[in-house]
Image 1 (spheres, protein in one colour):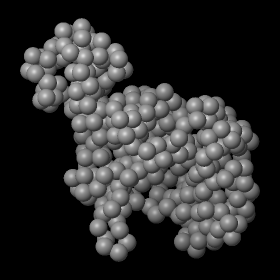
Image 2 (spheres, protein in one colour; image 1 turned 120 degrees about the horizontal axis):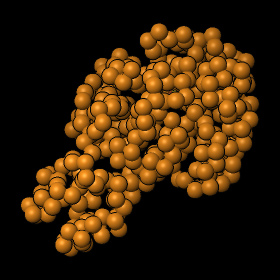
Image 3 (cartoon, rainbow, N blue to C red; image 1 turned 45 degrees about the vertical axis):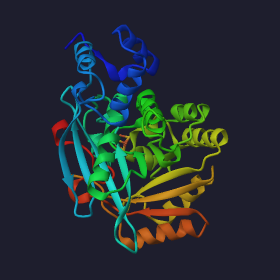
Length: 354
Ligand code: SF4
């Protein structure tokens, strides 16, 4: 097993070369690629359009890293949380969030929230993942395979396809830059699901250098930046990374991103009782948001175990949102989903990894 090569790390042309070296026609590479990336085959045996002989040769020379679904939990609101066991025994979680048509109540959309790292180095005070130790970056294949599983779960349970993907699960995607962008490339390419990048949102705590790099690469997916409070003192208390990259640096990087891509940026604001939910906090945040055309997601807090923070009151949340709307800002208040199974924002942290 040790000497076998991980087939998921080969580019299209490398795969073609390898297949030819095995004495096979190059078009077999395309079939193998479809099995791996579109049909989500987890073994060569499943690749039934290939001859038995070729499947045996593949088995002898290559391996497909095992990614097993270890657990599926379903929330009372329909949200589903999956725990995956990876080849080295680590665990990672992702979430499927169905939405229903307002008039018929039938599911008509499904969003996949996927992870990019096992654990996280950044230790945000409100986040369950941040309380885990950082284990490792996910490979692009491991990121992609979460999408494959959530897509088939959406088909089987809600008879819908994935409408959106958010990279907002465990880990900071921009600290696993290359693998994250490779995974998005596969999701959006014909090799994967040919999904429009406009339906994908990368959510980051705000890593200025990496945001500049995204800008230079003129990425076409959406960028969401977690601001949570627009004063450095409070933000550093909430997100220690702010001491390394304060709001001024982040603002410059976001301005550069908008200048290069022309895209509207989303600012995320996790609202916490008596911490960042006053009208003064809303004024400061609104001022920060003026840097680029943006929309704002206010996220209602889901308390995690032993959390020092509390959910704000509906009245304070409403006043906060109304102040921003009064300044003609585009504001969404995100309902909390799946909190009974710890699948909501900031709650992902598989117990086995703690
Ligand atoms: S919020 Fe994101 S960046 Fe912060 S600790 Fe959690 S996973 Fe890491």
